[in-house]
Length: 443
Image 1: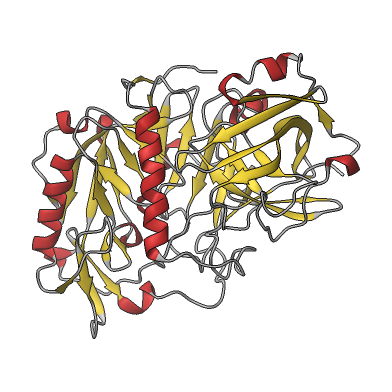
Image 2: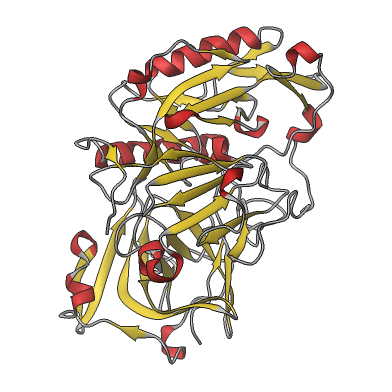
């Protein structure tokens, strides 16, 4: 039967939403009181904190390791493993962008669940920084394939499935993703920023979101082999990058190269992924120009300033001149060293009443909250180009009791706005319109 994916954002995140206690009026714009109990994982799924937008094409978005996830039986990686893979991904993005100069947005060539009629749920990882969607296909021995919670997609049982010949325009247009020819069937290979890879046949099939939303002849990789760690037990990757192979580009005539998502604050809640223009009024979003790089895959924004506890860091906008990549699969936001050092100093000053703890890998500002009932957490605000002001949710500030930011190697590298800082915020990508919108408290 046709492929009916089930997108699931594989974000290995932690913190739950943060109930607040009343603060003195003078402190309300500077701090949030966060109950420590809210930072602990819960055993049951609480569903949606905020109802997802209706009358549009949307699917649920969840953390992979938690009660809301169909992947909940998968092994949860340790913090050290998570940070290691996070750094590999960051290094790979920086390597691909090492010769790039960000410019204005130009017209360029999830994680959710999709069900196939005969194979049940198919769970994907949402990836805004890759171009080729793929799913594991039979035959797929383990290894080199990885275990998954869903049944394996079998193209031989789908009457709408079709391979591409090696001489077809689709195959010859794969460029760097082309991987030769086997039995006159087009082959592909994708290597990710963290060094993992997938390879197999390049085919097409019907992709169905719901009864009224389907994508005929959806092109994707039919993976028969992977290298590296795909330990989330998802069936594949739903790529949303700017390249012509991505889901976004393939559905441009219908959805206009617009998508959005909201990552929940913890694994105990669900968020959403949207294709097309949301049904909400544009006034609900703060909007900034989209930065594009010579690597068409990536989308970015440009920071202008950061405030901690209501006080600006005093870092000039030139420090952020390289732009920041928006990435759904990098967890920890990377800043230029000059900006990070100022942020760290301001945060430590605001948190001086708490006991410090040893660093945890790249997270060098950590605390021992033993016995603490409520944390007086300084608010952190990101100010983007055109004065688009975004106040981070408290779940986007602390990660495993540490400041959830890290430093790049130098100020010339593009920053990366990671998924932890995006939590509870709907991020709206209008690629053709050249803008990125943010709506706070969306999930």
